[in-house]
Length: 66
Image (cartoon, rainbow, N blue to C red; front, side):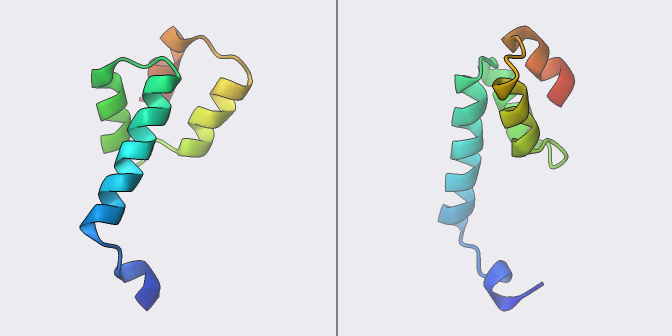
């Protein structure tokens, strides 16, 4: 890991989590599902964005991503 990657502050990590949560909520996930999405290191933002792009129904997002 480079020095730049290891110098991520708590505020920066909180901003990333907040952004992921906002995207998940905007996509139609419930608050609990959005929290689970943010806590899941295997849940990729690219996957969420792709599902939104192909108009995946909100009710299926959590089933696919979590």
